[in-house]
Length: 207
Image (tube, rainbow, N blue to C red; front, side):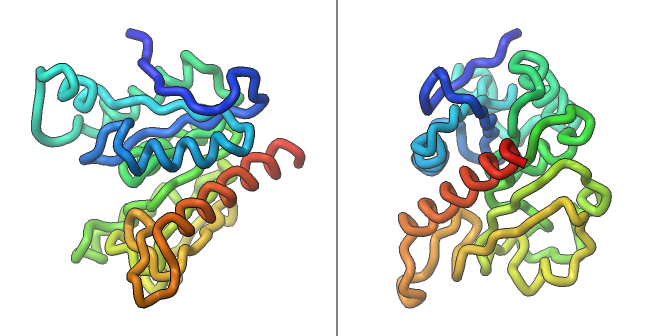
C-alpha cells in the first residue's frame, strides 16, 4: 500500500528529506509541522509519513503501543522504495532511531535524527547505540543538552561512528525546548535546528 505523505517545500526542489514521527505523536503534530516547514523554507522538499499503527489510530482502528520493530523498519523500506534512495531520511525520536537502523541498508544520502533516544528516560544503562558504532551513512543528530533520552554528559561517553555529528541545543529537552532561565526560546531552537538540518543536506549534496 503506497505511503501517504504530507509535503512541504517546493515540488521542484532538488533535495528531499523524509521524516517519521515519534512514538506518541502523529506526523501532523504542531512540533512536526513546525520543524518540517522550517526545513522546507530552505528550498528542501520535506515529506512526512506515518507508521502503520499511527495510520490505524487515525482511522480509529487501533490504539496502544507502537508496532514492533520489524514492522517499523519495513515501513521505512517501503517508503524509500517508493521515493527512491536519492533522499535524506530521519525523524523525531523513535522515527529517527528506526531510520538509523536501515540507513546503511538503503544507501540513502544522509540521516537526520531530531532528538535521538539513546536510552529510555531514567534507564541510562539500556543503551540503543550498538548499531551507531558502525554506522556509515553521514548523520546529523540534533539533541537538547538536557534531553532525558540522552543528555550531553551522557552522550559524551558513548562510542559512536565517525560518520555521526551531534549538534547540541543549549538547555533543550527532548523537543529542544529550553527553560526560560536559559535565555533561549523554543522557537529559536527550532529555527537553529532547521538551519543545521538544511546546511547538513546542502553540504552533503555539494561534497
